Image 1 (cartoon, one colour):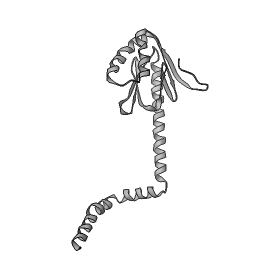
Image 2 (tube, helix red, strand yellow; image 1 turned 180 degrees about the horizontal axis):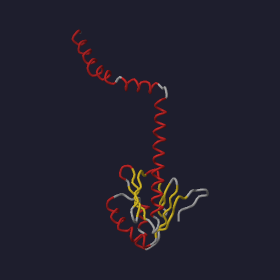
Image 3 (cartoon, helix red, strand yellow; image 1 turned 135 degrees about the vertical axis):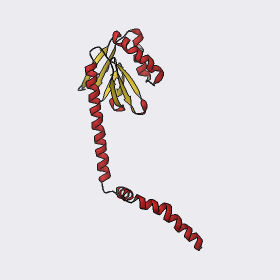
Image 4 (cartoon, helix red, strand yellow; image 1 turned 90 degrees about the vertical axis):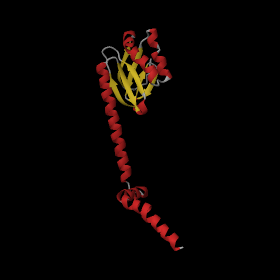
Length: 172
């Protein structure tokens, strides 16, 4: 069981029993060879062979598969398949999560929720970047000047400056 905290918000949870895990097992077995799975998650998925059930819990900030947990911020996309969910992150990291019978609607709702959360986070980050860029600091002024006059600066540095240096060398 996942340790519970007072006041936490659980978006969805289910228990994948032995039948659900049997349907999920082919996915996991193919993933063992192709991708890196954290060792704690591998231990949870080893329960498939013993017939034990695995609890899956989704919170606003994280998701848990058995005792293994991970921040939801690490994964950009969530795909929902018939018997499992696929969390895809930067640099190709992927986590397969088993579905229980009747949990596909909850899984699709969770995927939509995490996608909306990711969109809000990206928009806030872009807005913060734009605000920082609009501040009248010396670095921002220099950056605006370089952006506005890039062609002239390149011409001056790579053409006029070498010509000037060459002219000085001939005069001396």
